[in-house]
Picture 1 (spheres, rainbow, N blue to C red):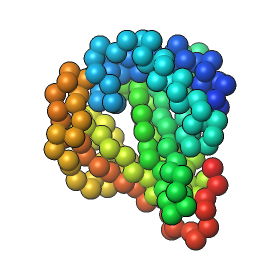
Picture 2: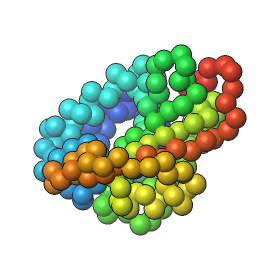
Picture 3: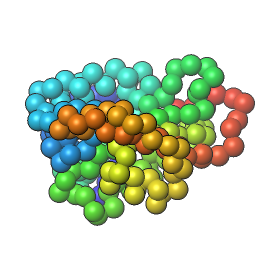
Picture 4: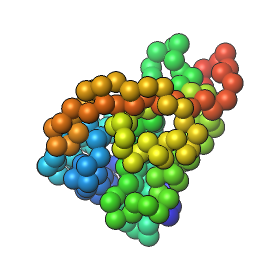
Length: 180
């Protein structure tokens, strides 16, 4: 598996495959912000809207490939406030259903954590559906469970589910703004 960081142009070039991955993730029951069934055009439009944030440095997106096939993504969202430049939110860790259980999620998570640390980020946070398979991944990777919010978001079937908040400290906070 090869993992690369997508710039805005490459993200736009990969829209169809990214949309297919997002639709597959939702169809597989993962709560990533969308209801099933997810229309491929809606998935493509969502990814297209991310291109400006990637170009502006507010979002970093990594894509995982097996040979030439997109099998997963992970992103880091960077806050724009001066008092929060030491942290980032891990978002949209997705692995195609055909690629699950083979370490792709862990590899993508490790990639995002290493890139964050290299950029001077000292704190990561995320939210995920409570009791989802993703919780096992985050726990095994050393993330700290903070707590759950009941009825926070609807799963792909429309049922309100609790969301668990996690964080991971990557290093000692610096007094200077990180670089991305």
